[in-house]
Length: 414
Image (cartoon, rainbow, N blue to C red; front, side, top):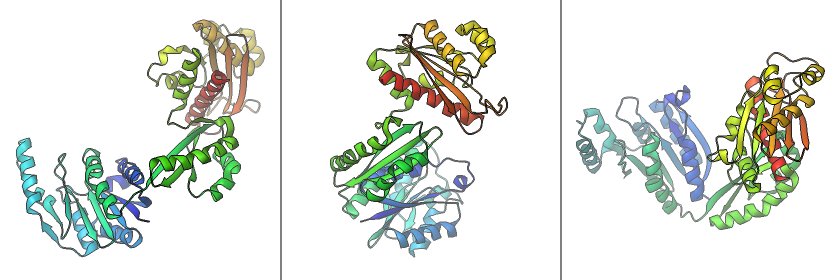
């Protein structure tokens, strides 16, 4: 079984000045080709450290995929580093040099002397054409191993990866399998609770394998299978998914890549329902999430940001005595807000939230992170949930908005 490592090159990656998107693009392409990626490394623009990273990767893995450091400047050192790591001298490739000169002529620019460095490759390397820039890539085969090096700019790397690197790797290692991942997206359940519910499956299921990845307010459960075809891999996943669903229940809101707003929208559209929102502590975040979905005007009537108590009474018809008796952060006020939103916009559902986002404003009875979420139905039914959300203000608002969408989705699919 062939294995691969990815090395991304550039000091700007280590300084946090550039977000590395190349690793995920390369890893996805290799997975689709059936090549297992065992490690990823980022290294700065230093010839010795790049050479060391390449040497170490070659000692562990079959294929080493490098991205970056193929430009014309003095800090572009990947060519030299790979040459040093493999004991191959750099040699100018006449055909690559001619292509480079033709590229500059085509765009009407003069070619600088330092650009000639981009036509030099370790002896024996195969040049990978780059019609989108001045930096050709190269592949250097070393018996059963190979180093593939590509430029860093995504618009240059991605076509080279698709058209040259992946076909080369598939041919060299006779890859006839693929790796497929299905992501079960969950809401309203913690990573530790998911682990408790499916921990035996982690141990017993090697193919498909299971991985858990937490985000703010959501947790992904990833089912990954390797097989001789996509169809066979999906069959393995299809056999495991019902078992996971039985354990996790209604907290799974998507298995097809949909976001929670998209899932809610699909449920509302399927039933021909509409929804309106009334927000206090989230300040319009729920409405903003709903309207990220194109066509959401079909089912989203509108929203009210009733942050101040006066807004709750004036815009949502919440009785002042209700706020005086129970406080703005209460089940009673949340329910009244949901009813007010539904009636104001004449929608099927009204969704409301009120709470203490922090960092101040909390008390022993109503601590920071306490929220009440309510859904009012056209038939007069009103549901309410009390939740206590950990974290700072931004995290509380984000998680609260997602929980509100989850509550609405559950109501729409009931």
